[in-house]
Length: 229
Image (cartoon, rainbow, N blue to C red; front, side, top):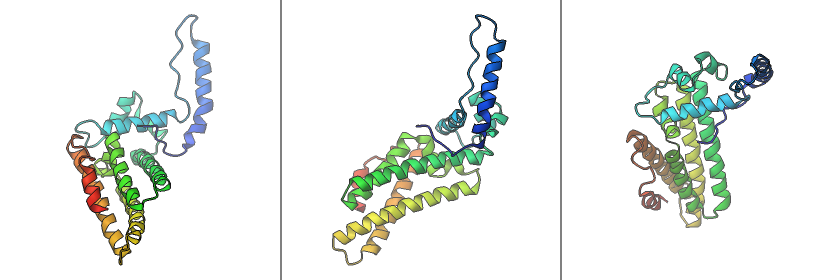
């Protein structure tokens, strides 16, 4: 997993002078010849570490519900330290969702800019979505909502909106493909195919997470995509 960012943290600016002061104090108090004290993370680094650790914990077997106490223990910090960077656990999950959104929609833009064939665009978007989930199992659990069952409802609503946007993008690609193929009802055709492709993607990701990450979401996907596009 690359370093996810959850937006600007107001604590980042506050931590900088505090970190410098602590470092100066430790340097002054350290005895001659002693090993230097462990450096504090730079502003923003701890935030990224928290999100990376949360995503990694979601990949572990039986990770039905992750508590802030367990997350803090994994990072060897106090729960209070977590709340200096995130106001709530829901905000931590929002950080993961932002990473998912930014990653996926950046890749979608690259696909639509590179490929001229709209039907090929749709197939590659779905394949990329499944491949992203396979490479980021913890994120896949967030995407299908398994990791959000016990969390704030707005998180599930946001992931639903994410897939609505995916379906809208697929609809746009498939409408252009239907028009190019001479369809008399391009909008109807595109709506049906986009809905089916989105359902396929969600279903494949759900099977992947609920199999303990054993069933690949891209298994025999080319045949399914060929039938639906």
